[in-house]
Length: 239
Image (tube, rainbow, N blue to C red; front, top):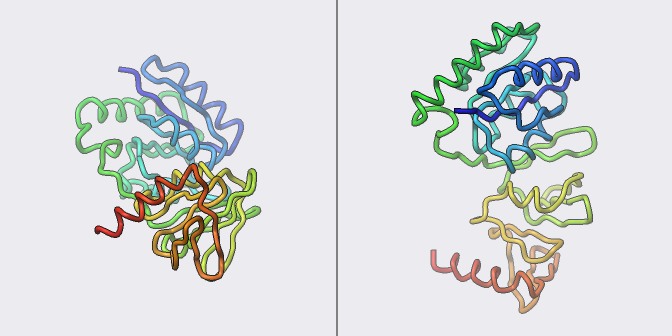
């Protein structure tokens, strides 16, 4: 059995070392070595893996926060220079906790633990735990990562490579594509009505023939999304 893995490490030398270690182990297949949690999130959406080598102290999002918001969790091996996070790591059911500098022998022991768990206890492993969707999303706002509760979102407006998330209290503009954000939003609470708009079901005030009214905003419903939107509304009327 070959286990697929992703490395998340913001330090280039440490990232390169971990990648070299992975390549020396025949039972491991490296999918990607990422420099940030946000890059890793995109990779894991497209390529679910068995094992995640995860640094803890990283800019924007720590490894612990990243693990908590992941919807589909692989087995996790923490890699860090800070021993004070060990207890919290084990409370999150991580496989192992590697302190830097990491030797190859110690790396192999952690990998053996992960492979053993994949083989002998898949039904209780983190990788096969029931999916629990968070009630929030993190989006990048300039140099900050902003947490937005799903219940606060009214609608999302797309503008090329940016999205603007409209809430009752504020607007947050983030450098990302609509498709990436759409995949994070629960499909039973949000619906895309236009190439440039995703709306929250609970925020709808009035549905017109070709528009949706949310507060003072009138948002167009394009022909390509009209059928799916109508079925979405009808389905929720029956619930």
